[in-house]
Length: 391
Image 1 (tube, helix red, strand yellow):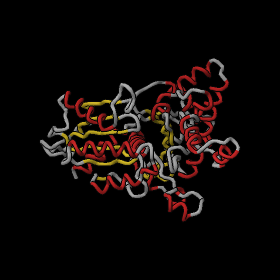
Image 2 (spheres, helix red, strand yellow; image 1 turned 180 degrees about the horizontal axis):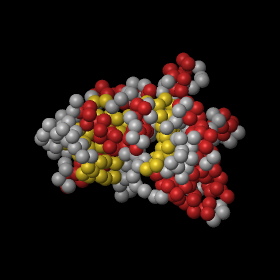
Image 3 (cartoon, rainbow, N blue to C red; image 1 turned 45 degrees about the vertical axis):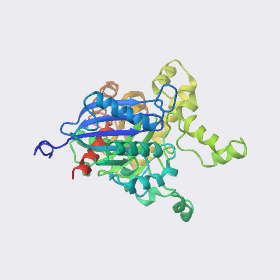
Image 4 (cartoon, helix red, strand yellow; image 1 turned 120 degrees about the horizontal axis):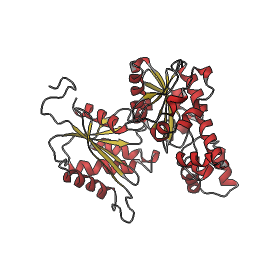
């Protein structure tokens, strides 16, 4: 037995993490004795010219790439395969060993995530064909948020209609929020159970969560990943009547409105760019559209920080993560400017320093810590997978 990690000597310790997305397959192979990345890769442009023909071909390409590195799926050191699955509905609220029945249940959830769950399912089916005897685990984006109370999960619409069609707040980016909230507690030298954190996952997709004592009690995304913060190409919160107005007055169809809100809105819709670095460059040149996009983005962030501060009551830390959250000092500064009444005092020097590890960017006198914590969703999935597969 390895006392440091509880593994038996000679036991399989590797976990392959598969993220089978709508047009790409990402993978990482990790050794759980020391969390070392043994292999990482990405197959892009699935179904496009020059890319893999389909997801099945892409996953077989992944298997070939690993085999070429001497890390093939037939290795006796491979303990399990973990799959990111976007939507678990109300049925899957924790990592789950994959069986035929589980695959069927995930298929039944496709209407809740039509762009993502089908690709996730393909990843599961192909790897089960390649290694049918190996434990495989589904880790759901929605699972970490399954603990939010009914008052936060429910929309104020007819209850019977909501239940019939599964309409409620599910939340997404759960593996990131789980990892980052726990890492924040460690950064503060506290136990997760004693720490209240607002996590701001700011990438091309963006979401916020309120985590009390290691348990999520509210989150910004809802039935789908469209609700909440302003994102790269998604609108975030809008008045639902906008949809009716666009249909009745603008003559737009359902698919056109869906495309508008998901792919032509957010930062892209406001200024034509969805890269915060480019928006910053344009702002420095006096570009008014870029400035507006930045201001709308930050205003929405501040609304959620204030709301989640009220939900938590006591906030120990506000943590930024993902591409924008980890790298944009300007976003962090603007989002927290003037929030001294909430106990937040930034240190502009600390905030301006670029770094790669978890760090504090708040002033030493700040009652609420402000942290930057790089997310690691693959490690979170690998941990969950290994724990379940070897218990």
